[in-house]
Length: 589
Image 1 (cartoon, rainbow, N blue to C red):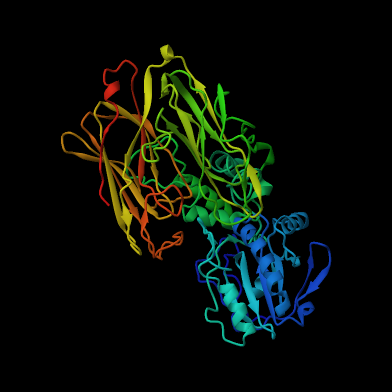
Image 2: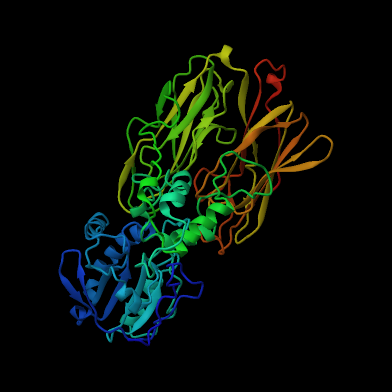
């Protein structure tokens, strides 16, 4: 079958070419034989009586393959009586027989999954990613290739699919009709392929790459964390080189959404240009190992708290929350009374996810006495997102907690293919008042009075806060939901000049960053902090749950928020302490 187009890959390095996905639609597929994870030989000929055969390329660690594995399993059962059969193929070099078996069991996949470690069948189909599906008619001619549907994607997770091209293709073939959409672009992880050239070059994993991965990636890319695969050892990287190259070149990883033209932040996660070139050169050269004796010691991550041992640990609830296997989970809110019987001064704080595999983000808000039912005026104490460090303002600085305050803990869960539980918690470390030099307070520029029209792609909402004392700005945290598009903070100083403190041109709901200024920044009295948010409520926003609806303020992800959190400090003995609460100005929508 040499007429078939094969995957366009740079054979010297395994990095995917930029050409469009090759099409095999309209071409017949000759029979092939592979072994499944039970050790049984399976051939395409075994499906001779099937009216339709769906061939799905899958991978055990790809997050989208995890989501769609269970879904494809259900579809195979639903369509079995209509003469439709499903067949899985795992072509990843990094996936072992044991791992494929565990994947099929965990995600309840009833159809056989064949092992294609040499990528022979992947080449026959021209498959590039996991998951990627091919629909064959009774003559084993490909009638559809591409994605399953639009429910899941890169940074996309919907309650249900709006478009299901796979189902439409199956139904069309069964009804004797042409497939209306014969090809779509698959979304997911690149198939891990056999190395085409011998490793070479001076840049090696041992001497150059391990250190970069340890500093930049391994905190999340290790067992038990939210990242989909581990990069903690040389063996772990094998098969993921092309995927690494793609996310580096597209600047998807490490995640960081701030415009580098404005501000300097101590938690900036971006790779330097030198680090990028080192990693890409290593991949181009076949990923050589080098001298194993010089591999640096792996980073040590705390089994428990990353902050100093907390003085108080606050669980979000008495019992763990259940996270379903699939779908979209409403934000979960837990109002907790920690028993603050006196004023407290917090020097360190950390949100600790009980189950990092499914915790998307956590925000712990302070609720002052008497404000339990106020969902607008809120002060953020500490937050968590993957890779977010614990809160530590440095020696002599502490967050002030009024006597009788409570915590409102917001938890957002991301199902990953099978039912799990979580009991997250907050850790706090306190200082005595006499040991505190600077007190850290929370502020907001907020506008709850907006209405985003249906199908609006660039709807602007603004909010302002006037600062009524000389302060030192510490952190900036923009907060929107699924329709968030961009967000920036501008300081308009008393002399009329303006400065952009933070610009996030491509807001990503999946990364709820707290941007920590490299050094505290003086903001003089009379400065107005203006926040401008842009929302995309159009069909062009793949995360948009309902582009035909008017959207207003609400707690859940399908509603919207417009909050510009910030934290600032003042000397403990400042006479302006009673005047710290900025005068809130109504923004416009």
